[in-house]
Image (tube, rainbow, N blue to C red; front, side, top):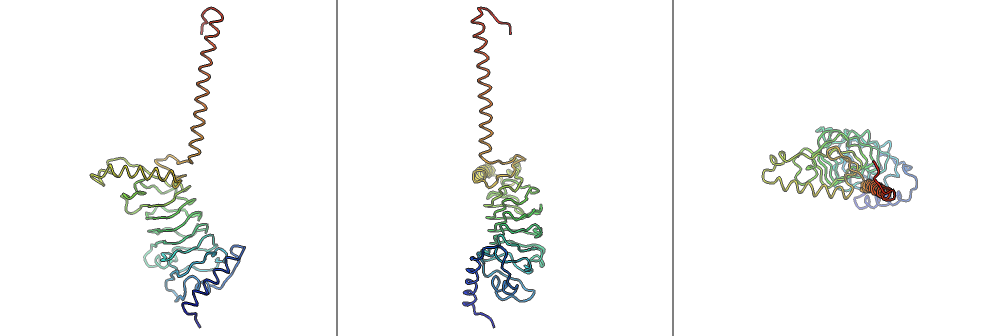
Length: 277
């Protein structure tokens, strides 16, 4: 016997509220068929699983033995998979099996260990949170929009800074409204010949947009811990500390120089004669 649509949704809401009261993460073990029913609804064997519901406190479930095979992570609804002990392999997802690539959309993976998730083959990431997931990104091109990559390893990725603007001329790899804090992403600023070639009469506009976006990203902290032409972007406080130290060093030098000159004048004035320096 199966629950009708109305009662299934009510059942999901009841389970969702019950999980919120659980104090120990990963402590609740439910049958895999029940997890299927909660997240995906009725699932036919070896067919694509599409998210139909999201659990607010999914981190309290023990998902270590649950298989995400044939799941589509290209979700039409916002899905919470944060801070779980799920073992996810994107190469087992439905679309990768068919076409050897896949898309991530509307999923919060934050705090879930994806170090063995096989991210190679991702083509597009939209509205996702991949912060603190231990993913080491490959150098393959992909596009991303409104995604948080904080504290993941993007140190092998080099992209033109223009790829973060609306003029992202490298269509195979562009990033819009993303956060890259402490990723080590390498942003490069190419000079104007490339811009002139790609945009003809729009070179000045592209440069201005690049400057504007760079200033906003630095101010927001979205590229803190990344590199622009090999220069590490540090916290504003650290730049202030360096500036303060340089000012202090300069003031010390200035005072010492002034005091030395005054001592010489005073010494000569009191002796009534010249001092050989």
